[in-house]
Picture 1 (cartoon, rainbow, N blue to C red):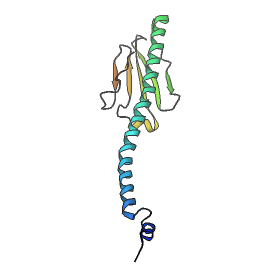
Picture 2 (tube, rainbow, N blue to C red; picture 1 turned 90 degrees about the vertical axis):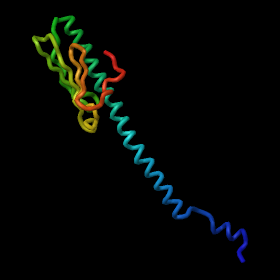
Picture 3 (cartoon, rainbow, N blue to C red; picture 1 turned 135 degrees about the vertical axis):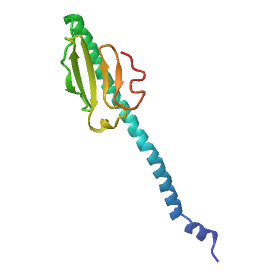
Picture 4 (cartoon, helix red, strand yellow; picture 1 turned 90 degrees about the horizontal axis):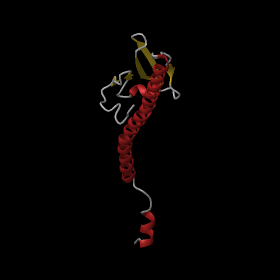
Length: 137
């Protein structure tokens, strides 16, 4: 006959079923968390493009104030390498369009190419309706 002490020694540790259930639960959590985290990172990286476009718009306004025309000087990759910023000036220097084209992993952003014009029109090439949400010029 086994004593309580011997029975307690035999019941230490985890069973295989407990380990499988734990791994299954962790897998479900990771399957939900990783895509959500990735989307949040992409959205936060988008602010870099918006900031660059707004900075260039401010520069363009100062150029127009000083020279009575806009300047086509912007054609560069952002500091992080996630966006290419370009300026197209038209109508004899009286209007411009700034674009931020995603590069690298940022191409997965649902907003796609962001555009800001001299009349303040903001567009996004993708299907996300909130690309410019909460941002003012």
